[in-house]
Image 1 (cartoon, rainbow, N blue to C red):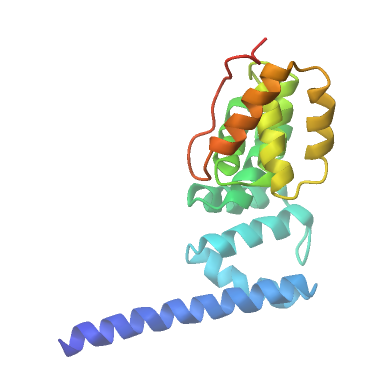
Image 2 (image 1 turned 135 degrees about the vertical axis):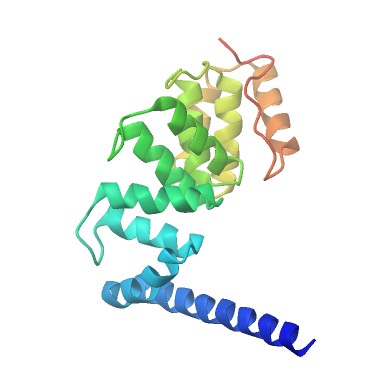
Length: 202
C-alpha cells in the first residue's frame, strides 16, 4: 500500500512540476522573455506535453526566441494537434493549406481546420467558412454553412467573421438565413459540424 501511495505522490509531483514549468514558460512568452520561455518549455515538449509542443511550434513559426523554422514549427504543432490542441490543429491546417514546410494538401488542411473548428476555435471556423463560401479546397459552395460558421466565429470574438456574415447575408434568402441561424443555435462544441445544408448548397 505504501508503495502505491509513493508512486501516486511521485506521479502527482511530476505533474505539478510540469504544470509549473509550463505556467512559467507561458508567462515568460507573454512577457516576451523568449529565452526563458524556451528553457521552460523545451523539456516539457520533448516529454510529450501537448501545451508545450503547441507553444514551441508557435515560437518556431513566428521566429520568437529561435530562428524561424517552418519545418520544426510543423513538427511540434502537428504533435500537439494529434493530441487534440485546437490552436495547433489550426496552425497545422494553415501550414498544409499554404504548403509551409510540407507539400500543400487541401484535404489535410480541411481536416485540421474542421478538427479545430469543432472545438470552437474562432480562426478555424472563420477559415472553414471562407472555404465553403468560395468553393475552395474541394469544399462544396454552401452559403448557409458559411454563414453558420461565421456566426459561431463572430460569437467567439473573431473580428472579420461578422463582416463576412453580413456580406453573404445580402445574397441569401430569408429561408437560408433562418436555416443558418438554426444550425448555429443547435450546434454544440465538441460535436461534428454539418457538411452541407438543405437550402444553401449551390
